[in-house]
Length: 127
Image (cartoon, rainbow, N blue to C red; front, side):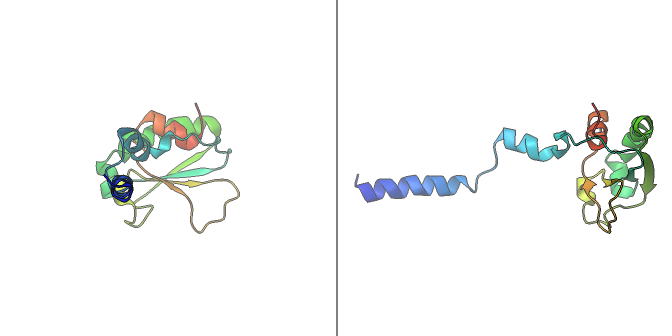
């Protein structure tokens, strides 16, 4: 095989791999981004749990009491709203908006896929 043909084959296989499905490890990281642990929220911060139709179906009402119990221990307020993202992120729910003390908005970070106690602890920044 000529050198130019060999190089073409190597380059083609590397380029093609950019279009293949991500590995299982990458999928695991993407599917649960809340595993990144944040700094603890300060007392007086607020988390707003979406209880809109899509978030409700995907587990918001199970996460809400966990937020209420754990947030109280660190002085974080818990509120609910019918839709925190106005449908822009509904498919990634349940969604939670995080308003840290001193943040003046108007756009606050929204955490997606918050379903379990581990997810809630991650949003609150507690172990």
